[in-house]
Length: 337
Image (tube, rainbow, N blue to C red; front, side, top):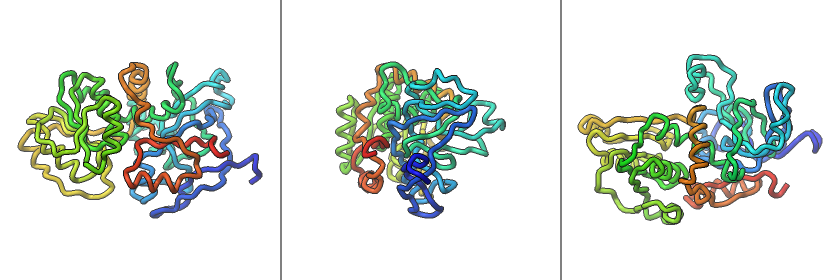
């Protein structure tokens, strides 16, 4: 490949643990119904670490990155050129499918799902292609840096808002002070709930960041009971504490991915008549809700972003996130280019 026809990208090159490399790949060309987005910010997600460990399905070789915002720089023949120059975020489910789930607006549950960053090339690269129906204009005043949080925010909207899981006046416990936990706590608070975000003493930096965003936090075992418990840690300990803290007839929301079998005191569900819910990824409706939440002024999203890094920092970023350092790290492929 010549320099003009290729670009750097973080790629899962083969199945198995590891097998992620920074290398040159072909630049995308827009199909008739697609746009090309110049990536300004792409968030590193816990799912990316699961992909690195081979705990999440992929179809290698594939460019990673599914939390993406940037500027439209080219359009396919069927797309209006009015998109060019607009700041957008991109939905993550890119399959072309008309199954029952897709027709019902649940692309996230499609049996033929092809997610960006795992089955379709994603945004850990300077350019990414997406169909016009999958791009969302960023609201006025929202930067592309903050806009990269649209995808995880849409997931939280699907979990907590779309079906009214959290209601005004609820007492809510969120376990796990990572990016999803902090987002869940913010969204629950914006829904009118009283919220506590729980972590461990080792999470002091993340809890401090959450406290700076105005959230109530604790690093001690929780003894109170809550109407809603939102488990975002992906740990057996966090899930156990959430089940024990749920009030009778409470709601348990599973968010964190365990990536393995875990042993839990699930009899709490029976004895307390708990309602167990979850939400995998996001729907078109939850993306609309996320855009509304972004413009509400009720979320301090900038507090989630701990650093913006070049693609060449991939190995260092992974090591830091595994050590629990930082919060939401974004790649800006323009850095160091």
